[in-house]
Image 1: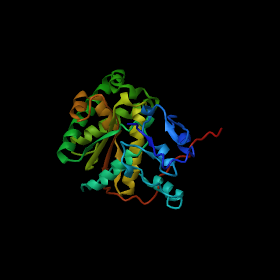
Image 2: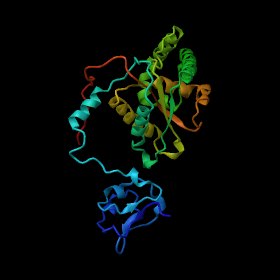
Image 3: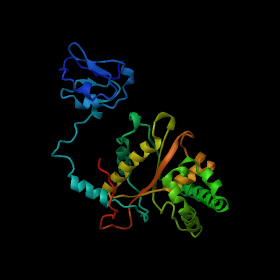
Image 4: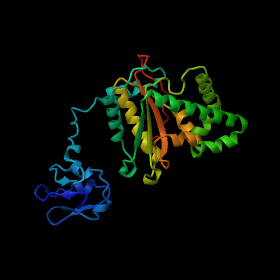
Length: 294
């Protein structure tokens, strides 16, 4: 069965689906649009979305998954939307209250609809919310960070190799001089009974994907995470991206193997979720952006 089918009773040969298809598998037929090399279809749905007659169907996809989009009058006000973006802040003080399952599922749905390279849709999530699992993971991560800090202090070059390819990226190389002190602060706080790694958040979300099945694994997971952070904000929840945990997982084979995530998967993003203690009343400050117009 073809991945996409054209209904001859509905198709008017307007050609919009042919124009919209990024894979060029729809062409003009004698009376209706027809498909060539249908196996190259990756279910982006552009053809169905643009068809005014709803003449295209995907046998493997339920019709309810293609809802009508918002009309121009129903879309969020751009200024209000930008204000929401400006209002999102990192939360480092979480209440201990559990987060409702329906809110977590809505956050996951926001990530589900993020773009992925070649519409791969391969981003998966590990949701850690039991107090026992969080405590165990935090202990393993703190141990890994302590070992990493010790290695940094002994030999920066060896530590860089342990950090993996992500350390060699220019952005992280710039951050590297402050890395040992920042991680050491988290380790020492844990020894005093303070939590500067998870900040007592009741939920940890870990995004991961198979790098062999997508061109840009880190992009795929990061784009999904950004939509999830914004959804959490709309649900009056706080979030905190956790780069320290990502580094700990990269460094420690013991920690990585303890996670119920396929060993071949990359883990570019982890973040905490919970109800914030502090209520922020003003937007974030950002430096003027540097833009070149050509």
